[in-house]
Amino acid sequence: MFTPTRPTSATEPPDWSQRIPRRAAEAQNPIVKAFYGSGAVAPDTPLRQVPFVALDLETTGLDAEQHSILSIGLVPFTLERIPLAGAQHWLVKPDRPLSEDSILIHHITHEAIQQAPPIQDILPRVLDHLAGRIVVVHYRAIERRFLHRAALNCFNEALEFPVVDTMELEARVYRKSSPGFFSRLLGRQPKPIRLSDARIRLNLPFYPPHDALTDAIATAELLQAQVAQRYSPETPIGTLWR
Image 1: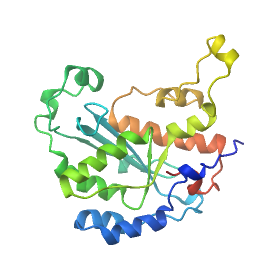
Image 2 (image 1 turned 135 degrees about the horizontal axis):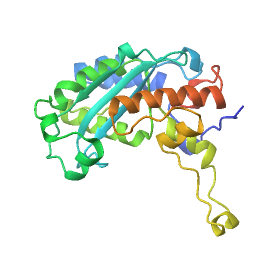
Image 3 (image 1 turned 30 degrees about the vertical axis):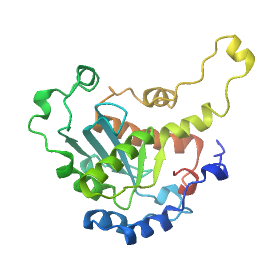
Image 4 (image 1 turned 45 degrees about the horizontal axis):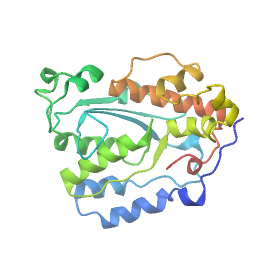
């Protein structure tokens, strides 16, 4: 079994079971206060007892200050099962025009979003589904930064939440250190840790990328496989969250 590495003191994650209640006390907006009021599990909670929700955002670009959310997909799950009846997917009308590159990547067209609601109509529903759960993503910078910016725009409130990042879990195994001299000399490249590559390594089926709900389901399945092959259902959530 893979032995999980603890982060160094410089990157030690907060105890979210303590941090979230403090944020609830500080929040002014009732929607944000209710989100934080759901709390978070203790860091020593075994993974088998943790309520997760896999989340994926499709965006018009990578910069939350300049780009917009296009679609949101999420699915609640546990280590044992992924109940698809609880899955949710929303198209979002961005506050900036779509670029041709964005349309080519996501296949979300101007016509598709013409009747879509703006993020301020969807974000409260998203937070309802995230509340009290540990959010699972593949590359946390996207989901954290874009939802934080959305909360600032919609509620004038900061937004933070505990995350398990399946990309980081891959990096713990395959990016522990930079390649040695001879590896570089021989042209050996580091193992790719994109969602599709990680799923292939763990013998999971291929799903077409860049659909928010499909990617959320793919991320939930990936975490289940990572835990099954490298960790244990008894591993404390505090070992994995950020």
